Length: 112
Image (cartoon, rainbow, N blue to C red; front, top):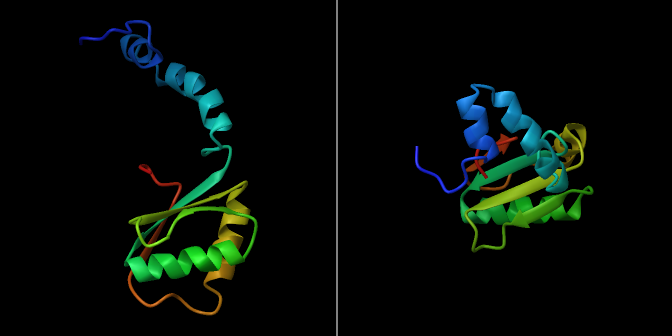
């Protein structure tokens, strides 16, 4: 392995075969950025019209952060303080029915 950062936590965790070292180093960053497990995150993908409608419904509802859905993005990110708040916001946004078009929701996605 070639690196300019031989003491980086990823390298240290790999050398010591201890993924817990990386998890400990990552914990403060995830808290600061409000990423899981310190917040709940969902990624919505699908047809642009369905994404725009979903983003508008989510913005009009509960206290969640919504990024994207303005017609230029191919995904909408929804962030909430807890998984219960996220589930409630998604349920409320679609209580009157789903937007027309294909829409997929990934809760705590592996990739954002």
